[in-house]
Image (cartoon, rainbow, N blue to C red; front, side, top):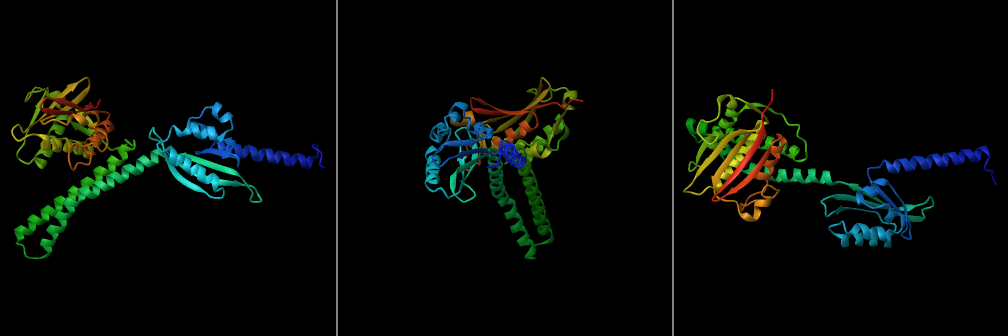
Length: 369
């Protein structure tokens, strides 16, 4: 038998210790929460990331009892039965690997991957579980899928216009004047498509917290005129738009009107378009006036949209949440996106119910010199 002070034995021991130290360091630096369980269900090893992901106290882990750990984590899950069924199945089928997703009651989502642990001879020694938090990537995936679906839906109209008008032009049965008219429709539809795509792509970035959007300074009077132009474009000629300044036709100092706000024109236009469309659809036939009041307060400028018609009381509390809509065919993303746009500009969008009316207010800080 080799002596402990044998130089060769010492080198072997040092190598083993170094390898163990490296493996422990690698385990602790992993993005995954790692749990190693023996064939008898005893907790053999876990890293700190595992404790953080599952919010497990040291007292629970110190028991070394996998069943107690399981019982502790089940209360955090949306589908605890499904979770435990998979664990039971894998312990009954030790040579199998598995990968699935786990959803938490608090909204988190984990990727769960499990493989059998074997020694050099292939003998089963237990099971390794890997848990990775994929909450943010799932949100990005969901967001992109939502916007792709909406883009597909919204592009149908301009694409139909382009196909219909181009078919007429190709048929060569139109007069020069008619051809010019159809070509103008094709051109406008293509521009509309391009603007839609640009808007939704930027919105998808904003939704996942990327607020590095291109902005430039615009005066308040220019923004007010932009609102007027959008209204003219979307109005069904039944509604009337009134733009006020401090609740009167011209009661906002000219120097204030020339102050600037810092905006992404594409996004702000999309937000105003949504608010005006909602106002037009909601206003009743008799009282069809839409008022936009512009005023300043505490280094911020406010654009206040008021129209007749009330939002159903049942959805007022979560009106700007995702997929909430009072319209039969609404996507539930319009006001949600408008709120995102406001916050991406360091501002906010709020709703105020009034008797017989609805009011949405966009708040944005001035651009300071």
